[in-house]
Image 1 (cartoon, chains in turn yellow, cyan):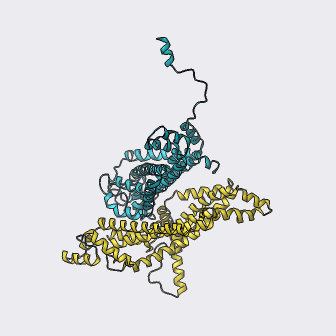
Image 2: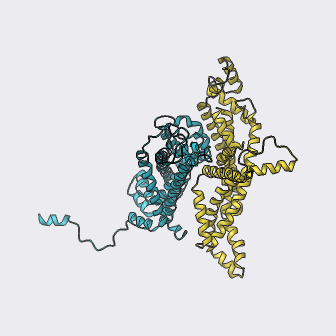
Image 3: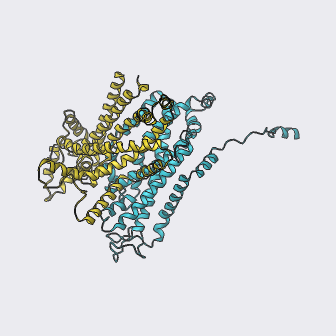
Length: 326
Length: 303
């Protein structure tokens, strides 16, 4: 078991290294940092541009291999280089990661909890009205791109605010600029801003989880051990909760970790539309700013989260399901 | 003479039940699934709209009517105009056309790659399997969104959207290929595959002739789901200006242009969005129905 996990982990580390290197090389050859400096007003002299680029290790006149080794040397010591404006990428990355993780942790917990509850109940009531409604709703939601959900919710929020005459729903930014007050007021302000983006992410996740959990639950409902449990004299509710749902949750938990990892990049659109300065929004801005190091750092972060999630789901699965233990 | 002639004629065959015609069975099953029928109906209507719409609207794609800037739907402009006087109906239907094409091409390409990679990995096993699945793992880890966004400048110009199609396909074959590999491993030990192998049929022929046709239903259902995934991905990229680039136009581009006017000029946003949601919904209905109809394990699953 330990050997198996160690080999898995090593494989993941190699994959993360390759993915990040690939992203760096691609960004270094396709983005054009020189253009960023040349566009400045007043236009700097070519010497000044070169000096800037050299200082940042972004000069396209330096051979790519040399730039790559310099960058890699830094990364191995935990330094992801500098942003094109001269800031430290590593510092900023943890700040942005915090924003993203805050947003998606709440959203995945909320969405998956509701989704699991609805899906499991729908399976118990198969073909009844609740099941039909739940299946229909989740099917519809899954067919609407998150971008569209985010935009429609935003448009509705604007309409509601206009109708009420005051700002009931906040749809832009993480907190009100220049807002001042005691810590609980600040916290309240932040939560107020988080409601809509969290809701958008949670809705899409709810649909996916409801569908998944319903299928898993249906597989288990007719199993012999559930019948045995009821035959032993357990109430139907107890048999379903204790025996059926527990078993049906095992695959869902691994699905949960996987979703969480994928959502780091999946939340990009929601972040950008709602003006949250998280990883995804940072990535898109830095591509337009021709910022090679930020792009590489974000790729690293996304690869690491996906790998961590799938490693975690390997462990969880082995822990929860005795059949896969080796 | 006559005796020789007689001997070449096929002997009187004993009456056997007609060979099961898979295609006919599947078609019958599909037509019995209401979801699939509705989906095909909607998709057919959308396809007609996409290819005929830009021709009958009376306006060219990208043409500007400076007499009608940001105007509400009228007899002249069926779905209104945007800020630069472009006809929303024409733009949206032309965009729908491109989005449909992108979805179909990506699904075709990625399912093809997935089938080949998965089947070869599963059939040969050993080093081939390890190498191919490692490539699939790597492609899963690569941040596809980042790569597509970095390369977006190559989507400009004539045929640039084809590059987008290839890249979208390059990042969507992995999961299906793993599924195909699993199925191939179980098919590999069947008698008819053994028989073919002992008769000296080369491996690539066995894979193409015997293994892949046997999982065609799965592949078709999966390709359908892939269409909607590709369309959603394309829309998201285009929304940020990192997908289809002008002068090409896709639904994502039209929606992005309309989203900032969603409260002041709702027609700019509503029409393309409704088209997009309808298309994805129709494709999902077909794919979902197909999977139910074709997969014996999942019958009686859904209402």
